[in-house]
Image (cartoon, rainbow, N blue to C red; front, side):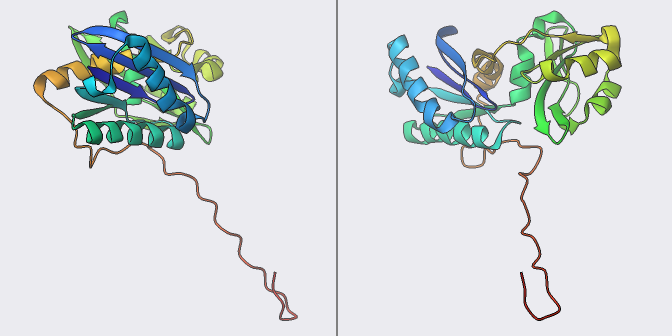
Length: 233
């Protein structure tokens, strides 16, 4: 049985599959409650599918980019399962997972996550001649800079797209196709992992790390102000 885990952003998703058949899946808005909601949801999903976690043959996890807390919880949960059950693990890009459900469109697909500070995390993907490819590296850019990369009609997707849809349309006109807002499904992780499972191409759980793209912001302490009378503040 395959267990897929995505807790990259405020949306989380889990899926179970066996022999090419999805046994159960769930997606929900968890906000920042990944640490308290993920395992209980997984337990419930296993109960609904009437299977045991001991049936797991491989764990698949979304490795980012995304929120620091969400990725930490998802990766640690996935690694914990892989270690305790002695099964392999595969990490899949969260942006690629977001893009994959639009693969059959034939168009370039640009998944977008909020990177903060007025920027977005993005990449371009496309399925052409039955080959799924990443066209550009995952990177952080402003909406203006990202728009300048687009040369043809492109699907924009992701939970943050609705927030910047007007900016994209103003810059790109008819080249911007805004996908409807839908929660990601961890089933996409299973589909993307299948070629790697078939090839035995697994990750090392000891070295598998989340993709942040940006370091967490650290607030530096204010310098102490000296006074001429010898005191300090």
